[in-house]
Image (cartoon, rainbow, N blue to C red; front, side, top):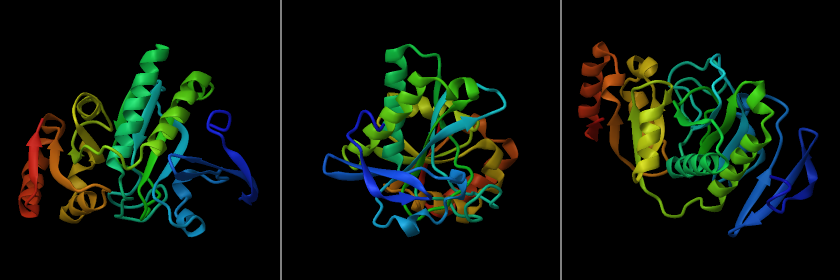
Amino acid sequence: MLNGYGFDEKQENFQSNPTYQTKINNKNIELITLNSESVQAQNLPETFTNLELIIFILRHSSLSGTPTLSVHTPGNLTKAELGGIPNKVSISPANAMRKALTTMMKLKDDLKLDYQVCYEGTHHGPSLDVPTMFAELGSSPQQWQDAKAAEIVAHATMETVKQFGSGPVKAVLGIGGPHYNARFTRMALESEVAFGHIIPKYAVHKADLNVLQQCVERTSEKVKTIILDWKGIKGEDKAPLIKNLMEMGITFEKT
C-alpha cells in the first residue's frame, strides 16, 4: 500500500507507530497501525473523527487453514466474547464490502491463485457507529507470507476506498448458511446485490427482533429485502424467524 498509492508519512504517530496519508478521488485516506488486536479498537473513532469508512486490514486464522480472501462487518449479535459491545453491531457498508469482494475475485483470477473468496458472517468486535469492514488474508502462516495474496488485499482495500459512495447496488441482509457463505458470495459476484450484515446458521436462534432490526437499520444503505439461505437455517429456527420478519414488515426471499 505504501509503495503503490502515494502515501506520505505524517508528523504525528499513533500508538508510537508512523502514520501515513494520501488523497485519491478527492478522498483523504489515512493508514495507521494498531498495537492491539483490531477487535479491541472500540475507541478508535474517538481519536480519528469525521470518519466515513473504516477498513481493518489483517490476517485471518481458522482451524481448516483454507487459503481465503474474505470480507465482513464486525459486531456482536449477542454477548461480546471478543471485543466490542454486547448485542451491538457496527454499521455495515454493504456496497463497499461488495467492491472489495469483486476486486479480490478479479485479482485472484488474474494471478491464478488458489484462494477462496467469500463473505464471512457478522462476528466479534468492535461495535462502531461508523461504516466498518474487515478485509482479511487467511488462514494460516503460509498464506500470511504470500506476498501476491497480500497485494490483492491491499489493492482491493484501496479500490474500495477510491470508489466509496459511487454506483451503489441493492443492499440486503443475509440470514442462514455457514459462516463462510458461498451462496451469498456467488449472488454478490453474479448479480446487482450487496450483502451488509450476514447472520449465519449457528446464530439464527439468537437473532431476536431487536437483532434483526438492528442489522437492517445499521447498514449504510437502505435495506428493503432480506435474503434467506433457506436450506441453511435449522428447521426449529424457521418459524420464529419468519414471525419476526412478518412483524418487521420487510420483504424477504428464500434462496
